[in-house]
Length: 314
Image (cartoon, rainbow, N blue to C red; front, side, top):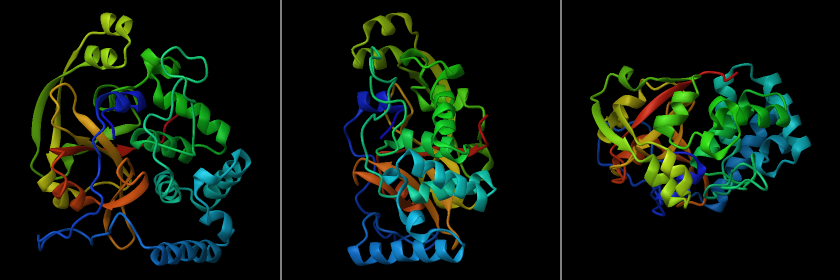
């Protein structure tokens, strides 16, 4: 669940960010097919076998490719990235492959920080064994753009921090006001989806955020920010899905008056044209793939979403 980055997530809400199952919609024009968030053991086993088979036919190591990234040691991550770059030259497709290979990664609220001894958040600077909705996106992009774990680690700091300065006050805490602004490899495509849109203005409560984190010294010197953004209403998700780039960053717009973004994920159009949202879910307790249209049609927590095409970060 996210309003922003990891610590911001921790500060604002304990409500679940996803529904346990995407109910079947009565809408005859819905996009794609429903996929439940939870699969039976038999279906999961069959899916794992399918992944292994596809990997084998592609000429790779089926056992290694079937393993989630979360289970790989540093040397295993290096080998995974070498293989991924060798078989997939397209950056966007590497993001999608990493998202799929992250399914099942355990969810943790605010798993990343500034490292041991940091004054405000001493969680590690990188952790592939557990993610929240923001770090899932950040680490997926960093890995897709890198040839080794160390390169991904270095790139991740440039993604998570303004100007790459590793300090809590420089972290991209608010997705809508910091993250997509400072990460210029992202391009807002919300207005290009040929759907109805809504313009909304709110005061981003930076002071309140730092007060919630019991950091009064930062609250005292940090001004609030008035921000206007355009979002697609959730009722337009089916129509929007037809024009969304794959992959794309999806920011879920909530109803709080002092921030916009409560959750985020990666939009992926599957080979059979199903629109899916890959996300780290606090409800499921892991990374899952949810049917995109149903996620917004059946979740009253969100007003809608903004969408961003993903370029390769430097």
